[in-house]
Structures are given as structure tokens and as C-alpha cells.
Image (cartoon, rainbow, N blue to C red; front, top):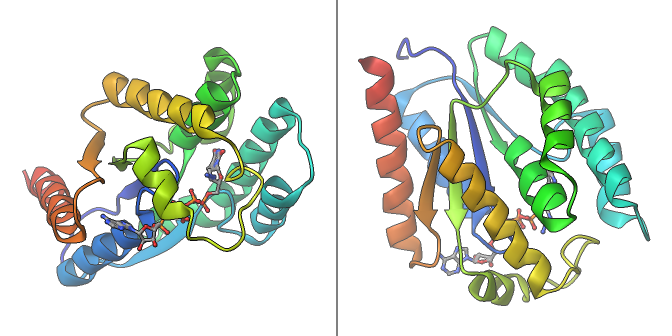
Length: 211
Ligand code: Z5A
């Protein structure tokens, strides 16, 4: 077991970006480093938050502001009951999506003002910011073609192309604002190339911790 301080790692990307594969690669790195960790996801990752996820993904209609507030309500449960206790116990946390998704989806996708999301971020996330975010950057058309193979689409996945183009712009804005934390991977590439890129990002991150 290595003595690396527990880190908070998040995974982001638009529809069909390949986050499932990315999650496997990240946990393989953590296994190899012999660090304790948990994996989780948003919306969800905790009992109440999973109930909210059901509402978010399977309700017939939700107003955009309701959607935003529910994302942050779920996030608060996730933070208070899972993320902060794990980090305090010395475990790394790897979350499939976190607050950047709210800026991309509710901000750019739904058109909610950035300042409203910032307000909620200060209130709910506060100092529990990710140390590293891996952004799976896929062309919208490629991502949608990959995701088209899914048998059942949830409420958000049913959105049309322009919505997902806006998501991509939202993530690009986050990347531009925080290039030290967010590392973008070309998720259009073949699986081997994507895996190698993720391992390289993880290794560089670990090297930075050792300095
Ligand atoms: N949401 C939000 O609006 N606001 C928020 O604050 C948060 C979330 C936190 C649920 O998320 C929804 O909540 C999500 C955003 C919103 N809605 N959407 N859209 P989720 O993470 O549970 O659902 P998801 O975005 O649909 O992700 P996913 O299905 O878990 O992962 P993915 O990246 O979209 O896809 P994948 O399953 O990893 O890969 C798709 C397919 O492509 C699969 O068959 C793979 O084998 C294939 N694939 C993957 N990589 C490659 C490469 N490199 N080459 C070829 N084929 C590949």
C-alpha cells in the first residue's frame, strides 16, 4: 500500500463518450498503486440520491430549474454521506460525473444562468472540489451513434443533437477555465488509444502528488 493522500477524481463527458471503459481503466490504475478507493456516480451514489436519480431520469417532464435543484439535492446527499466520509477515511473517490455536469447539462444544455449554478456549487460542494477530472471528449455525432445501440433511453438521453452540441460547449468552457484540474481525452479514438491516454493522465497526476 502506498501512502498517497486520498484524492477525489471525477469522470465527465457527453452521451456515448465511453465513461464506463474509462472507469475501468482508472480503477485498474488505483489497484496497481494499491490505494484504497470507492467508485460512485451522479446523480446517485447514495440511497436517497438514487431515489432522486429515478425522478430525474424517468419523470415524464421536469422544469429545468427543478432538474438543477434535484441534481444538487442528490449531490448534497452523496457528498455528506459518501464522498466526504470516504475521503476522511483515506479512501480515494472516483465519481462518474460531478458538478461539471451541472454546468454542462443544466447550464449550457438547459440554458440556466451560470451564476445560479455557481451559487449552488458554493453552498453544496464548497471545498470538496475534485482534484482531477478526466473529460472524455467525443464528437457529438460519434457519441450519439454509440449510444444509439441502447435499448431504452432515459429522459435526458432522448434530447436531440443541438442539446448535446451545447453540452460539449459547456464542458469546453469548464476545461478552459480549469486546465490544471480537467484533463481532456480524445474519446473518438479507438479503445486502445483511449485507455493509453487515460493511463498517461493518471500516471502524470500521481507523479504530481509525489513531488
Ligand atoms: N446529469 C446532469 O444533467 N447534470 C448533472 O449534474 C449530472 C448528470 C451529475 C445520467 O448520467 C444523466 O444525468 C446524464 C447526464 C445527466 N445524461 N445524459 N445523457 P449517466 O452517467 O448515468 O448516463 P450517461 O451519460 O448516459 O453515461 P453512460 O451510459 O454511463 O456512459 P457513456 O460514456 O455515455 O457511454 P458508455 O456506455 O461508456 O459507452 C457507450 C458505448 O460506446 C458502449 O457500447 C461502448 O462499448 C462504446 N465505446 C466506448 N468507447 C468507445 C471507443 N473508444 N470506441 C468505440 N466504441 C466505444
